[in-house]
Image (cartoon, rainbow, N blue to C red; front, side, top):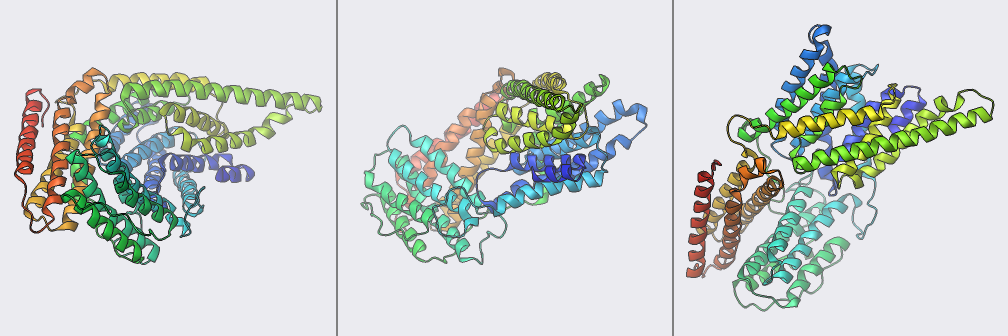
Length: 599
């Protein structure tokens, strides 16, 4: 609200529009978690959005004006090809690609008096303001006495200990696989939270070093809990008390106190007892150092290789088609707000927002609701303003005076609703629709609430058709790449456990990589399975591969716990299960090849 309000007070409301857009995207990209990690999660896409506005503002000048209906769709399609390919490499890259392309479309189509450079700077100023607030404002609820800037990281680490306790409680029951997946998710979130700027292996702050040490102490606990759950035997309730006390100590910053030790019967319970003892020592040494908390960032060459591999090319081509076709249709129909259609298509084609049909229907419903709310609200405001002006004997005084401030208030309310609305795509669409229509009003363009509905529905139809359009070659590259990455990580983990069973830190890093890759593959499979049969059928054969992979990684963890004792040998039962699960994984691969899906 503040950048927009300042622009209205300065009698330059159009200057506030790019700033408000930057803040809006920052709110959409932000997620619960550490403040430091939000710098990359919000800041890097904001830089991409600023570059998009700069590029988009220059696109209309390319080629003769009479050929704009042909040149602009081609240029936007080429930009969509690159942005879509880069988007396939990760969540931050996905936000960057989307923000780059949407900002380019808006820069090319929204008639603002500011130059391209000014628009980009204003966009970055709005995003920077939102990021500044994210970094400096304290949390709503705080239970710790430490620095507030670590509240998100502290909660993420505490959630790992809670997830360990939940997995131990579920051992021997039907909920154990789901609890193991929840533990993986908690570890992933904590790993991301601790990988923000200046949260590195050799952090200077004592509070940072303590958080790293607490996270590192949770890794052996997670390994032992996974091995105990794999064994399939119920555990006494007291085994959960230790991890829960550690979680409470992380949240409050207080000492963990005495921890109840489990009976040292079996390799899994011995490993749990050893992990609890090591955690108690780590918590006592407040300035302890961590081991490999931050994720290793991929280099530029592997990133580009992945972006322009089969999965990147497939997604980039679909983004290019959706963006180019929707821009050509909108320009061909001579729509006044033609940029709405390709901007809508870019959001809709994102696979990380849910299954294609679901997000298309959610977009359509959200747009209709948002347009209706906007039209009804501003009609009431206009009517009240006219009535007030007539009663005071001043003709037409109310609408021009109250209009900008009412639009600013609508943007403020919508901005506050964004964090809640992001939980469902339809709700997010409704909130963003009201916000964007308010910004259009402030930019000096005529109200076009129902025009936005028509253009959004047209974009929905284009994306629905393009998303199911058969392309040359076979589909399912996104799922295949995720599964292949998980298979490679599982084999590296297994080889290391069998060759170097005493290398705890190396084993822990490979275990994290294996489970994280497995979670990404499972998420890609679940998303594909929720699509219509033309899409879901292409990747259904990978379900068996993922199932065999999960069993193999869990068994590898159980073997690692058993072999950590220098005097222990791999039990024959474990070796037999490893061999059987490797055979199952190989058979699942061959079955996927026979079904026509390359593996």
